Structure formats: C-alpha cells, structure tokens
Image 1: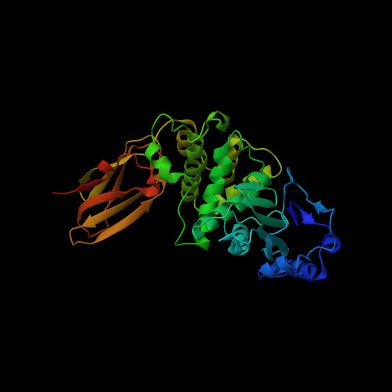
Image 2: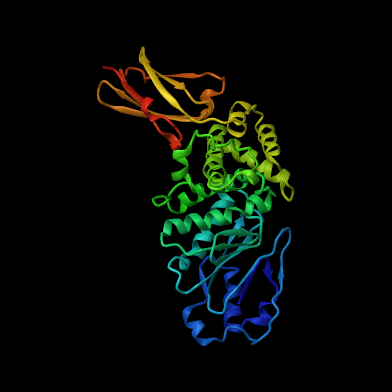
Length: 394
C-alpha cells in the first residue's frame, strides 16, 4: 500500500472490491472504518495486482509531496464536514503498524482535531481535502500528511497528533518561514495544539513542548528575544524560543485581545498571506491593522528585547495590593487575595494592565472585605523570582 499527499486518483484500479467499498464509504462516513484490519493482512489479497503498480495522486496548492509505503500496515479512515456553509468534507485516515499501542485511536484523534481546528481554533475550515497520519519513526508535518511515532502515553498521542496536523495552517496554508522564524511556525502551532489537545483530553494535557526545561533558563543570556533568526540558534535554545516562548507570546496576545478580536486578526493574517511568505513584521502590522490597536508596548519587548517576567507584591496599603513589574516583559498576573474572615479570592488580569508603561499596579480588595494578605500565582511558569510574590500583614 501507498499513502501520500493528495487525493488518490486510481483506487478502483488497485484495490480489491471489498476494500474499495470500505474506502469509498469512509469518504461519506462520520464513523471510523477499518479498511485494512489484522484479519485482512493474513489474507494478503488487498490489491488486484502483484508486482509493479502505479499509484496516482493529485494535490493543489502544496509545496511538497510526501508518501509512505508498507506491506503490513493497518488502515483506518473516516471523514467529516469542516465547512457547514459549503458542506465540504475532509477525508482523514491513519496507516500504522499492528504492534503500535496507540495508533488504533489516531484516526479518531485526527478527526476530532480537524473538527476543532475548523470550528474552534483557528476556526478556519480545514484548507485541504484530506489528512493522513502515517506511523513512522519520527515526528514531522507535510502537506496533507504527517509522520508520527508511536507513544506509550495516550495524552502525548493526542498532543502530537493535534500538533502536527495544526501545521497545516502554519506553514502550509500561510507560508511561514520556519528556518528563519521558527517562533511563528512552531509557536502558533504549539499554542493551537494546546487549545485542541485540551478539548480532546482535558485531564491529561501536559503543557507546551519543552516548557519544563525552559523554565529554569528564563532570563539568562541565552534566553534570546523571539526575533533572533532561528538559523543562528543552536539546540536546546532553539527549542526554548521556537516552542514554549513562542506559544506563550501567542497565548498572552490572545488573552489580551480577547477571543473575538484575536480570531478576527488571525483570520485577516491567514487571508492576506495564504500562499505567500509573511515575515514577522507582516504579522505585527496585520494584527494591529485588524484590531485598530497599537500593540508596540507588548510586542516590542517580547519580540525584540532581552528580558524576563518578574512581578513582586511590594506592599498592602489601604486595602490595596501593590504589584510591581520588576522585569521588562509585560505579562498577565493571577493573584490570590486573603481576607480577615478567612476567605480568599483569585483574580486574573491580562498583560493589558501594563499598557501605559506603568511599573506598578494597584488591586483593590472587594467592597466590604478587609485584606490581610496576597500571593501571586506563577501564571504560565514565567516569574523568575517567586520569593517576592507574597505579602501578609503581621
């Protein structure tokens, strides 16, 4: 069997009728159909022809062609509507080793991922006619196809599957340059994957790739600005910048703008740059143009400056908590306030509280509540010094 970028043009020439029927049924079905199952492998009678065969595929608006082949893989397939206005369906399949512990669920995971990408985030109908998840020896995205390893942790399977499929939008729909600006490509994809994977697997999602090792490196000299050309960054710094730091930037921007304005701006960006090759400034100018906002106070430090996030609670005065921005990166905060009656309340603020260039921010206790203490929760794991994150009255 061969699986490849594009739509298969001659299945009727190669597949035996039993498998051709299931293949065609999967194009119209919301259910997962096992086209090749274990019992079929034993028959060894899947193709009409032996020896040399010709496989024809057709794809539009793709930059690369990929294929995978096997004489012993299982094959699951399904489809779904990705555009409720045009009623357009996308074919989704998974080809995998029978001994894989996780791939028997991958066709379903891929289907759910594409559904949520089309309707939730980025809320753009999946732009291609099909997606094949091939069980290979590494992890890499291609047009209409991804190559994924088998994993022991089911949550990691959800994460990897959704991550690689999300690359369909970035870089294949919008031609981002991962070589130079990996934080755009991997950052947007890591953030998108975090949304999709948490919907599919809310209890098991493990967070951004490489975040656990990046946290200990935040603020050091090799924690370079996002704008640094990715070609000149060696691993593991490349991983820090491209994945968790890039994803955090987009997450904060999303929260800052709100869902409606962020999606509006992201849709404008993908519409303008579909099939083209945007650079970071094109993204910046499009987001500002679409939202009508000057975001330089947020974008300039995160993209172009060395720095870090550090907040401190410096005092509690007149029933107000005084939070100081010690680092130069603006970021959201989450604070837990404790009151005299023993109750507490958690409040979240977007990075917008630093928009005016202020270095301090005052948070008033709710009316009628006497404040005795407060503590900053290390939101996103970014705060480099947590020793100054709480203050309680003696």
